[in-house]
Length: 76
Length: 535
Image (cartoon, rainbow over all chains, first blue to last red; front, side, top):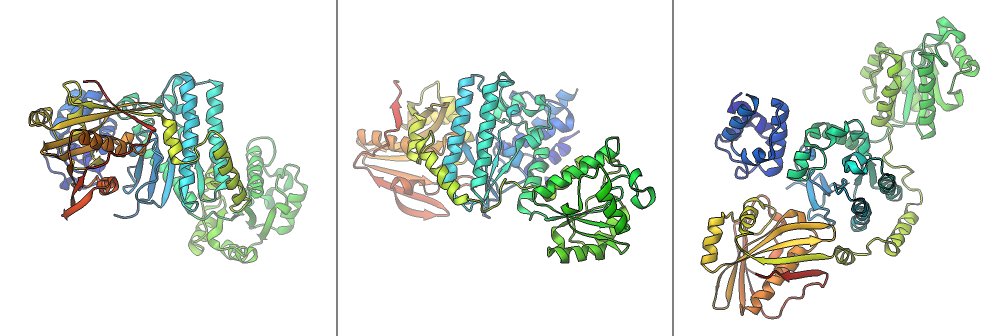
C-alpha cells in the first residue's frame, strides 16, 4: 500500500487517468477533487481497505500523503 | 457544454449515486425551480427525512407531493420525467410499523402512478425494486447521513447505478412485442413425443409445478399485451392434443397468436412467425432450453433477443421475471393515449382547489421564509471563512478567505454580513455571505456574494441582496460596483447582476463588471421576512 495505489483509487473516483493527477493534488483545490467526488473516494477507500473512517478524518484527509498516513494507521 | 442527460430534483445528497452520469445536474435540496439548462430527462428523487417526530414526517411527505405537483406543472408535458418512489426503509426506525406512516408513503407512491397514468412522458421507478434487496442496516450509513445529508448509503452507489441504468435501458428501449416459446422442457418438463401426454412434467409436484406456474406467468403476460407464439420441433397433432387434453395445461391454443410446430430449422420458422404477425424480428424474444437452437437463432437472426435459459427448473420463474423486466415491462400503467388530456385537466383542477400550490408565489408564501442578517462577529467568522472556502456554485467571485483575511478586511472598513435562513421545514443556519468593501464617498463595491446551494430555488438570493442594497441606501451610498468572475462551477450566477438591474460596464475573459446607481429602495416580496439581528 503506497501513495501510488491510493492515487489509482482517487483516479477512479475522479474519473480521470492517474497520470493527470499531480502528486501534490489537494482536495478542494485540485479542480476535479470536489466534495462529492471526495465522498466517492472515501467510500472506495473504505471498501478497498476494509476500514471505516471517522467523520473528522474524512474532513482532514486532503492530500495523497495524508490519506496514505491515515489508511496506514487504521490498518495497523 | 453538452445537454445534461438528467436533471435530478432531490431532497438529500445523492450525487455519489449518479457519478456515472457526468453531465447530470442537481436541484438544491427540495428546490422546485426549473433548471437553467434543460436536460434530456428530469428525475424526481426525493427520499424520506429522518425526523423522528411523526407529525413532521407526515407533513414532509405531504409537502413532497405538493412540490412534485408544482414541478410537474412547470415542466413541459413532453419532457421525459421519471419519478422515483419513496421507500419506507430509508426513513427513521421509529416509523417502522407505524400504520399512518406506511399509509402516507403508500399514498404518495400511488400518487406517482396516478401522475404517470395521466402524463405520457412520466415513468415511475420503484425504489423498492432496488432497496428491497438491501438489508435495513445497510441502507443508510449514518456517518454519511450526518456528514453529508446522504439518505442512501454511498457504498451502494455501484449497485444503484446498475439498477438505474437497467431502468433507463428498459424505459428508453422499445418494448418488445412477442415471446416465441419452445415447448419440450420449456413449457413442460420432458419430451412430449417420447414420454406422451401423461408423462410430461406439468402439475402439482416438482418440477411440474414450476412449469405450471411458468405457464401462468405467460398467460398473465399475454393479458398485459405480450403476443405469445410457439416454435417447436414436434408433431403438431401431438401438441394440439396435449393442449386440449392435459388437465394442468394453463395455456390454451387460443392464447397463442401464431405457431410453427414442425421439423424445420427454428430461424426460418421465427422469420415466418414475424411475417405472419407483421412485426419486426427486433420485437421478438425467443425462449428455448436447447442451447443449440438458441445459438442458431442468435447467429441467423441477430435482431431477436435470446436470453440464456436456466439449468434448473426452479430457476424458471426468476428467469422469466428478468426477461419480462428487461423486455416487456411497462413503466406506465395504461396505454399512452388513454384519456390523458382529461385526467391531466382534472389533476390541474385538484391542484388549485386542494392543498397544492397554484403558483410559485403561493408556494414561496407557504414556506414562511425567515432570513436573519448578522453582521460579522467572532462567533460567526469561522463559519463565514468556511463558506468562502467551500461554496462553488452560487458564488459571484469565488474569493477564498481565512478568518485572518476577514479580520483584516473588517479593520479596513469592509462591511461583512451573513444570512441565516429558516423556513417552516427547518433552519439551514448561516448559509449566505455578502461582503462590501471600499465604502467611501457614496461608493461601495461588492467583494463577495455567495449562498450555500441548499437554500437556492426560493428566490432568497434576490431578497438578501436587495435588502443589503436597501441598507446601503440608508447609509447614503449612491453607487455600487460589482463583478462576476467565472469559474468551472458558477455559471448559474453569470447573469445574476443583470437580473438585479445592474448595468454591465465591461466584459473581459468572461469576467463581467457592473455598476448601479442607487436611488429608490428595492421592494422585497412580503413573504420573505428579512430582519437584522441585534448586535
